[in-house]
Amino acid sequence: MRRFTGSGGSIAGNPATPNYQTLSEAEFERRSDSLWERYADCDLCAYDCGVDRTDGRIGACRVDDTASVSAHFAHFGEEDPIRGSHGSGTIFLANCNMTCVFCQNFETSHEAQGESATPEEIAEMALELQSKGCHNVNFVSPTHHSPHLVEAVRIAHERGLDLPIVWNCGGYERPEILEALEGIVDVYMPDVKWGDDDAATRYSKAPNYWTNVRASLREMHRQVGDLEIGADGLATGGVLVRHLVMPNHVESAKRVLSFVAEELSAETYVNVMAQYTPYYKAAREQRYEEIGREVTTEEYRSVIDHAREIGLERLEFDARALESR
Image 1 (cartoon, one colour):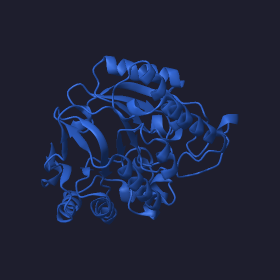
Image 2 (cartoon, rainbow, N blue to C red; image 1 turned 180 degrees about the horizontal axis):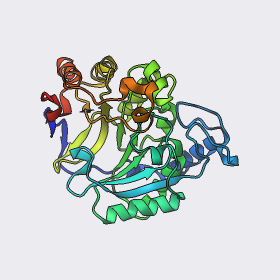
Image 3 (tube, one colour; image 1 turned 60 degrees about the vertical axis):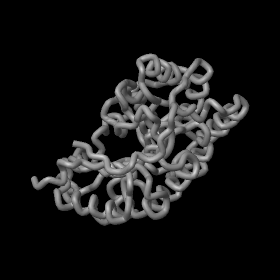
C-alpha cells in the first residue's frame, strides 16, 4: 500500500505545455548535433570513459552508438502523478551506464536484450504511446543514448507529440549533459541509489557516485524545480526522486534524504521504496551476502522516521512495510 504525505505541491489549473514545444527548431538541432558528437569521445555519463563508440567500440555501458529498445508500453507501476489512469508511455532502453549487482532487469540492463532502434523509430514509439492515451513519454535508462532520444523527441514533436518527457535515470549523470537537456525534459525522475561512494563502487560499479549524483540533482532541480502537478493529478514538470532502501545501508539512505531536504527543497517529491529483493548476483554470490536479504521493518521505519524528522513534505512510502513482519 503506497501512502503519500504532503499538500501535493504546486497545482496548475491546466496541463502545462511540454518544454520542447517552446524550443526553436534551430536550437533543437544544435542540441541534438552537439550530443551526437559526444559518441566519438564518449562522456555522456559520469564514467566519462572517452571511448569512440562510433567505430564499434563499447563504453562502460557495454554498447556502441546503436540504441536498442527492449520494450515500450503503457506502464501502470509508476508513481500516481506519472502513471495516472492511462499509464506512463514507457520506452525501456537496453543496457545501462551502471552495473548494479542486484538489478532485477539484468537481462535488459546488462545483457542488451532488445531491438536496435533509430531516432525515427523511437519517435514512432512515442507517438504510438500518445495515441493510446498515455500521459507522458518515459525514457528508462536513457543516459547512454541521450543523442538518440533528443533527436527522437525532435522528430516526434514535428509529427505532433504533445506529451511531457520523463527522464527516468539512475542518477549517474554529468551536469554538462543535463544542461543540453534543458528545455527538452519536463520531469527528471532519478533513482538515487547511494549516499556512499564505497557502496556505489562495490554494488553498482559507479565510482564517485555520491559526488556525481549530488551535482546532477542540483542541475535537475535548477532546470525544473519541485514537482508540479496539474488539476488532473498528473505531473507536468519538476523533479521526482526515488530511493530504494537497501539492507545494511540505512545511513546511506538517510544521507540521500538529508541532501534532498537540505540542499534541494523540503518540497521535493520523494518516493522511499521498501521492495528490495535480491536479484542477479546479489541472490547467488556469497560475496554479496550482506545485501542478500530483504530490508527489515526496523531498517525501513528508521529511514521513514528520518525523512519526517528532516521535514520532507511530499513523501511517498510503503505503509505495509512499516508493519511488523
